[in-house]
Image (cartoon, rainbow, N blue to C red; front, side, top):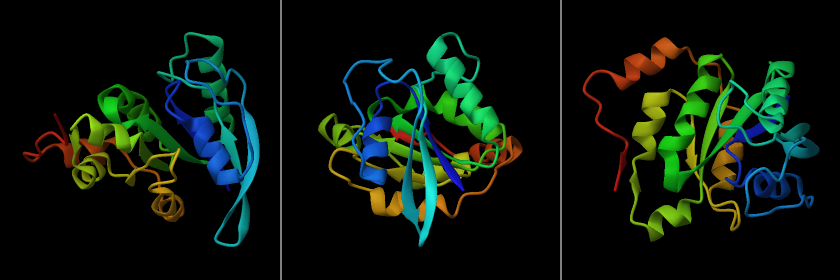
Length: 181
């Protein structure tokens, strides 16, 4: 099994990579730092699993070199689980990419990273409702502190491809917004 870490630039993918693999990758607080990918290994239920830190992308319709690398990595690793890392304080921005990946049939776990920032900004996100709407596991995380990582790792094995029709069905039926604040 392979795991791809995908998301917008500057959402903490490299911090995820470092925490999950125990290695150190250059991290910065400006977008576009990773324009290539980094591979490492982690243990998951007693087996070695390859983890790939993919360059940041806003969409699967690539517009620059980093996005081109990200889309190619996704296409070349159809059998991978995708951990879609979103900035929880700007969740609406990241959902487009997450939905594109889900729509293409990849097993996805959504990580709402920077959860501590949502608390500081008094942003309310109903994680369970968002999980129902998307039809994939959603986990609140703070990569710097490790908050939510135990749950994230346990959810990775539970992932399965989801059809977009299921998302539309889950979003219908009077569900109200999962984000407030």
